Length: 77
Image 1 (cartoon, rainbow, N blue to C red):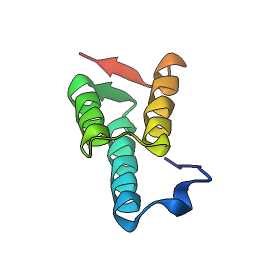
Image 2: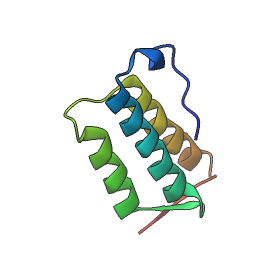
Image 3: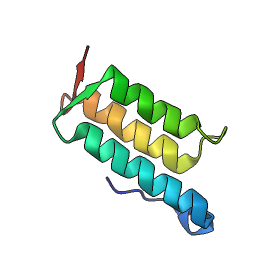
Image 4: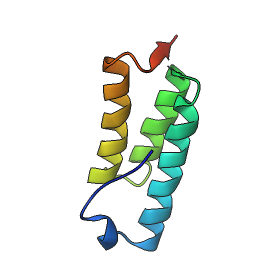
């Protein structure tokens, strides 16, 4: 999953690592074409872990939502 933002170069090294880890976590959750409630909850927890939500984190979650809306990803119970 790629992240595009003009702000990304302003992220601290820790924020860049966290964002990269979130992106990898999302990629793993979606690789089978299904996202479970547990995977979704884990992604949301990772997004809120530092008490703030960045534009880049929103973009990752939004991309997942769009894939669900378009039928590319299914939600498992």
